Image (cartoon, rainbow, N blue to C red; front, side, top):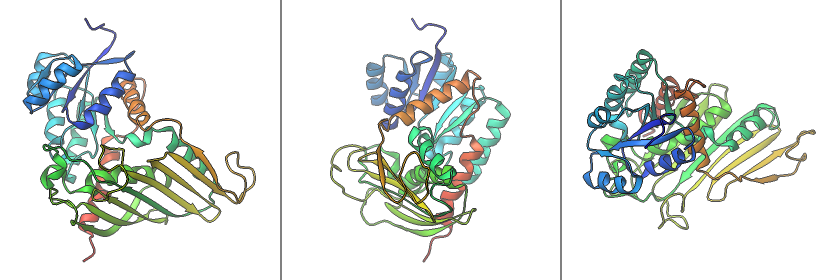
Length: 344
């Protein structure tokens, strides 16, 4: 029998991303436990009930009518985020919503409005903001060790292993392709380091993944409001060592920020580490004129655990949401600009 002191959490959606959220919730077991979940696929309900040991339902409404929940985690295709949020917020349930906030700008704005009216915590899942390594990079740049920031670069290259039912193959469900699904993780990290993006242009292509209706590869040139320029590259069509296995095997992700006095590189995977360089005296991390490489000891999954912990603190009224619907709407605007401003 579940102790009443635990928050009762429901999952909406039981696909591949549910695994990392379930593991994150398990790490927060002193605060909350999974109490129920729902999924449209009968086979997913059957298998997850056995795996998780909690009731599974075929619809959101049935789950919410059957189990009294304290909050929900929404893990569904982008194009139904608004419908899911309506169902949850009309019951004033706090929600952790996987990114992006929506597939269309008008839907994101409506989610923001509904969230404001409901007056309950709504956290959009920008999990990379919760990894300690990003805080170290933000600190290194904000303290001036690279001097004046001039340029940024980010990439995420992989051959994503699609399940037969994977919504990422659908243009309608994703709202795009690899860019819409993946680039947000790069850009919100760059936003944390450099501020908001002002202009976006670039190219998308569809050459490697016939099963995808949207683009499998994209490259964008970014201009930040601060004047920093950069680029971001994403692809689901790159076969790197280990691509035959599931993510993060065969995935290469990194960020770089360069200034007139130094540089920092954040290698997210496959070998997590940070490289620091500065010409300035007095830095505790790196000696002047020498690259300093520091391993990232915390696993990637830490970002999901800390995000979940933060969400539960918000539900308990101890913190304010770090990523609000309005924050996530600004990111969506940046993502959509690439589709609007593609070079011919």
